[in-house]
Amino acid sequence: MKIGIGSDHAGFDMKNELIGILKEMGHEVKDYGTLTNERCDYPVYGEKVANAVVVGEVDCGILLCGTGIGMSLVANKVRGIRAAAVSEPYSARLSKQHNNANIICLGARVIGIETAKMICEEWLNAEFEGGRHQDRVDLIMAIQDNQ
Ligand code: RB5
Image (tube, rainbow, N blue to C red):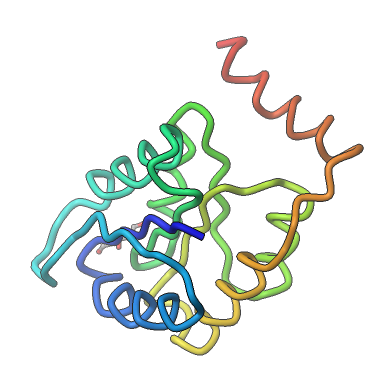
């Protein structure tokens, strides 16, 4: 899978660790920054990854900030994105199976690297179940068209 990854300064170290782990898993990873641990604004990098997912430059995205919350707020502003902030593997798996999340957001100040790895594995290996869940995803996506 081709994965777009991005973070702010709070997620920078974990992003770098995850890039290595994801490559070891056999994925292609495109890093959208930030590229140093200097303080920066997470919306800049969240938007870059979300846009890359929407235009199909990458298959899916992983975003990291301190809590994962700011990045999820940003990504969900981009039309076509379903971003889930997750902190354990069960929700990560269900965010794909039921919600067809195309981005997950991790809190580097909330979880450790081993949990982050398990979350990524569960999410990347899970498949959207469709059926009644497709109907619900359609209802979610219709909201933006009704604004
Ligand atoms: C940065 O201090 C922090 O606010 C950011 O990483 C993130 O947690 C925001 O949601």
